[in-house]
Length: 216
Image (cartoon, rainbow, N blue to C red; front, side, top):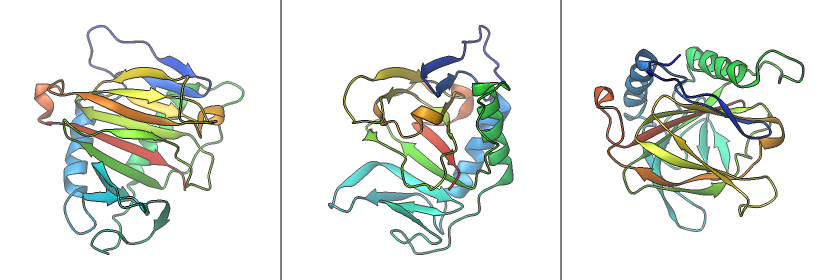
């Protein structure tokens, strides 16, 4: 699904964690950006997330399907305006399943077909970061699928035991997907930095959007 002149090859970053460069073509990226802009508007739109300890995440966020807050899910934006969360679109679940198929192929050991039903949309301005964390608030062990739009970021992927080394840094470019399941499902990961101004000009986005699709 790439429009790149020289396609970058898929790469297994860790067992169960696969980088899919250029997975979304220009049309898909434009569709996803338009959807993100619509979802970001109130009610239950883009918000600043505060942690239980009183900290504030530099990334702004919204939820689809169910509202995520530290550290659980609700049907309304309980730490925002209290409005019902926007519905999870079926087409986004189809995109996520296609990414899983592209990451793992069709051979033995492929994860069961996920029924994706929730997503988090994170917006990074040039100064935003994401600390090392695990996506551990879901009951399902289905692979997490991440789509990137806009500025390139450094995506740091570690292991499940602790947030420290060893880890692998991968550059995620607009249109890339990243899938992690199986032994990598609960690995620590984060975004230590962005490369501001690297978004494709035709996309019309300053900063980075990350859409992370999950099965609750």
